[in-house]
Length: 130
Image (cartoon, rainbow, N blue to C red; front, side, top):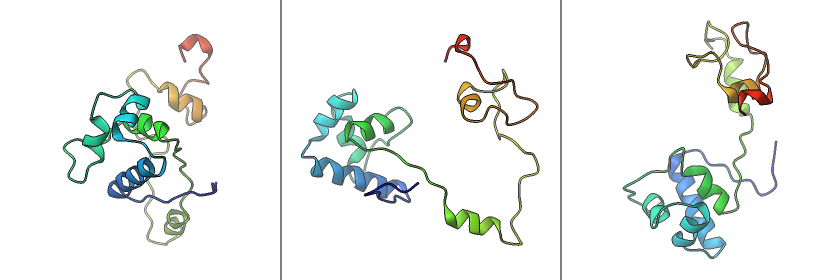
């Protein structure tokens, strides 16, 4: 999965630098990002400054990315595949997901992997509230 013009980001600081660069590239202000992302006033300037008092989280990350006209693409990492071929690689003993909600399987997991084990129910239907 290689996208034209893709930029590799390997840590949080690089992500913040990329977002700050993109704001300048599209000639926006942090206030404009707040407005497009539906965030509170001055939120983007708080999370995108150098010594930030707040950090991007699960609620604010994707609205800011979308407001800047960006997408998040997560390709397979060739370095991880190379590590798994090593003789000293230790795999987890238990197959399947590492977290299961109390009611069984989460709806997102059912959509992306309907047959990930005998403990899971089949693909969710529209009546399940997706």
